[in-house]
Amino acid sequence: MSAVALNAEPDAVLAIRATGLTKRFGALTAVDNLDLAVPRGQVYGFLGPNGSGKSTTIRMLCGLLSPTSGTIEVLGLPIPEQAEALRRRIGYMTQKFSLYEDLTVRENLEFLATVQGLSKARVKNRVDELVAQYALADRQKQLAGTLSGGQKQRLALAGAVAHAPELLFLDEPTSAVDPESRRGFWEKLFDLADAGATLLVSTHYMDEAERCHRLAILDNGRLMADGAPAALMSALAGRAFIVQARQPRRAQALLAALPGVLSAAQIGNTLRVLAATPDVAWPQRLDAALQAAGLRASIAPAAPNLEDVFVAATRAGRPAGQPVQQGEPA
Image (cartoon, rainbow, N blue to C red; front, side):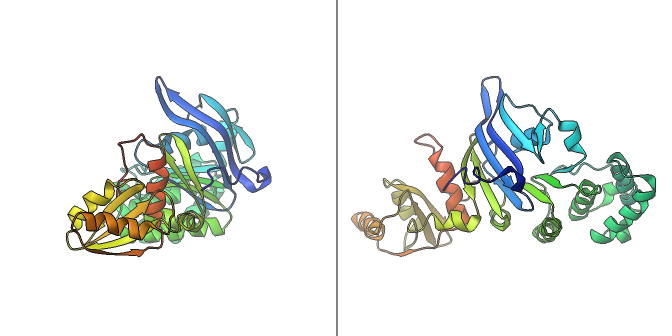
């Protein structure tokens, strides 16, 4: 898995290029020598454990936070030197939904459109477009604070794109809404990408990360993997296995401690085992370890999934004795 596979791309096809990006807060290194290349017109995902540097990186790319070292170019502008010029060309949405809860839906959109530089003549038509596009037409007179989580999410996205930004940053925008709202929200994101916008999205959800055109996995402030989700999964061929044992808890504890095993996670009555390296002898090795403990099991290869990619990438960057178990929050 190459962490800098796009670095050879010409700048003309990139919305974002960062080189050696580092941010320190005293003794804490939040982002550590990060190289990043985000193609134009794609949905690019950030996935990583809490504290991995996702939000700090986004704030630096937006020009809201100055890096300790490294260079950033966003939409052809050097950042943070031209952060003010960049703000007119980007949108920014966080999980906190920056809305004025004592204003109506329409008043929120009118205010945000005005702040973002739309003329008075343009504001009305643009807000009409937004309430129709984001299914808010019947909520225009409702106070934003009384909306449901999914409705607030749609309103926040509509406000973030009122000025039709070229680049949209979304920092964990779906963490406070239900699965149905998340699915609808992602359809809107792909509509924006189809219209030519570039989107950088950080997420806690594997299913969302898998939907991205490209994905970066961060851990301890470092870029551990970068590529199309399908390519990242394919790179783990021969390393994932399904184990069915009558005593799955005993089998899980035994296999998790086996040298060369990155994780052994119980999923229902089966175990999903991820090895550090591919080897045709893994099924026999796993079976022998179980039989030595008096455990009978069946073992079969499994197609790698994105959770395997996450475990493999983040485990590679952790000290010995701190394994990542599948299912750990991202």
